[in-house]
Image (cartoon, rainbow, N blue to C red; front, side):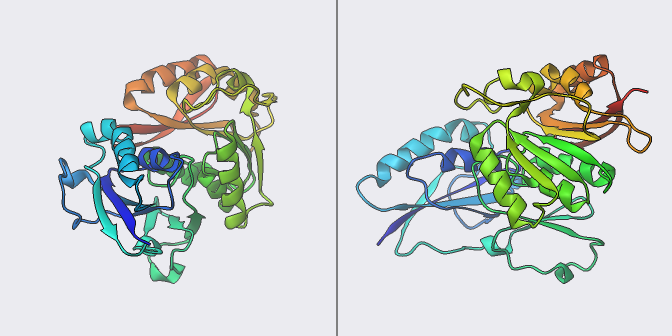
Length: 324
């Protein structure tokens, strides 16, 4: 059987968007993400910015050209803004099983190493990393692959602030990467998301990384988040279970759109508890510096004070604690 191989380059910021757009087509097969490959040819308007190359294989039949046209239209805005290269196509006799996916290794902060499911890697391959924490994720339709800047800055804050004695909430758990990271840092966490696909992805990541005893996965939202619909703009949800904010968490992590942080600022405060050991910590991400002041104002007005931040390009993650 012949296959049509589709490939394109993308940036750190757009890799999750591109993967999700490709994955939500009815005919999409396995999506494979590799580190940037320079030998694909074609037009690359900003070659110095490419971080990853994405491959998708379609059966080469009478529908193939129609599918390519649809994918091209889906990716047009990202290509126009320089976040993705032109789509390249080639006919191949066989679909590669892994390409170079097994070599993709992504280090974040001082300790985290993000690996694909089948990556061939041993910690001793990088002896300079002390107390390394590896996280394995399969390709999913949920955000949080470890490649997007919002995930990177979130993990950097977690590395500095999460302690083994903590119990917390990961609101908008997505792929489950932050919940797994929290568990591997020794804490316990409730992973909560209002998207059923994200819930499944989180459950897979939790079991894949052997942290099921420390992570509870639920579908739902915190407080007023149940009335906001799908956080990422997906189909409207008729009913989302509500978790009441009752001061039961030492920390809350939320990698979500700015508007969600602003609306849920008071619910974040009510969900946290302040103890002698922990001050009630909130870590927010998922927005750019364009929205930083609005988010910061909402959190300050809700009773938080800033303690830390992390930035990557225009993306930002903020750490706040309850005011004494």
